[in-house]
Image (cartoon, rainbow, N blue to C red):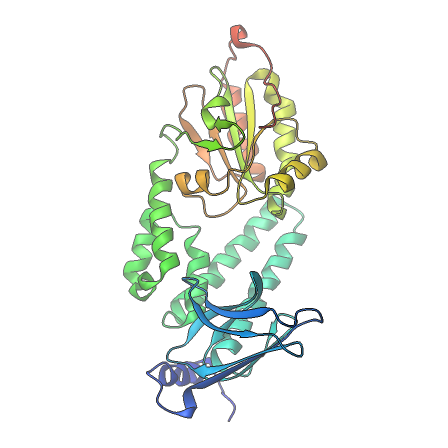
Amino acid sequence: MKYSSISAMLACMAIVSCKATSHDSDYSVDATFEEGNNGMTAYIVNYDNGEKIDSVLVADNHARFSGVADSVVLSRLLLGNQRVATFVLEPGNITVDSGKVSENTPMNLLLAKFINEADSLDMLYNNAASDSARNAVNEAYGQLLEHYAATYHETPVGYMAFLQAAYEYDADALAAKLKQYPSYARYTRVDNLVKAKQREKATAPGCRYADFTINGDSSVSLSDYVRPGYYTLVDFWASWCGPCRREMPVIKELYEKYNSRGLNVVGVAVWDKREDSEKAVKQLDLPWSQILDAQTVPTDLYGISGIPHIMLIDPEGTIVARGMQGDSLRKVVANAMATYVFPTTTGEQVATIQD
């Protein structure tokens, strides 16, 4: 039987999400891997909380899972610790080949549709020729997420869309959305995001910056680089983050234009290996100070859920703005420096120190 509409799929999903008592609720997942992975352990884990649902050894380049689907769950397939695919674990026969998930079960068909639409917008964003074009794509992406979150709010696909949209909400907007769609409040990631947004609100523009210390071979704190008499631009980034790398020329432009007039820049490498960050600093020829190997310490403190995240702190230690990129970053810095008289008594240049 072919489903004539998404509504028919959801009707089917509503039936199979009940406690399973028959073969109609059995699942099988057949994942194909490249040569050389035999003997490794493959896992199906809950996308939301990371709990292991099933595990098997890879044999003959396949991992074959089977069981009873007590509920329909957004899941990840892992090979060891490596992420292979995201799919919905539900009744039926599911295959994963080279990371591609079959579309022959209701929720996986809906998930593929959502991902394809999102990927199309992502391609448009990456090929956009201007900030205004990228902003238009961002708006379309937000509308896509809102549509899926609202239309499919009782499904794993709706949850994925809601979670992606929620990263852009402030604390108050997220609370309002959860009142509108209370089913999303049960998810672990959403609960963690609510807490992060509360921390973000506590470090919003107008608040004093929150200091943090990274303990390694030597301890280093953000306050070591927030220098009296300077505006300080803080860039939270990672070597593997494409958007972070694309933003570096903008930060370089601002550094070269305003450093001698009182703009200090400090990079904070998060969610990254120290050696990868060090390599990227050399590759990108970044002339400003860096705090390396910060991991989740600053992002937890500031409620940062995505990078790059750029913050401007004034000479008194008050956060002027955060979350800017591109032209909006240029505008914020230009407005701050236009009215700022840099004290000549603090006139030494900021040293480039790699900590």
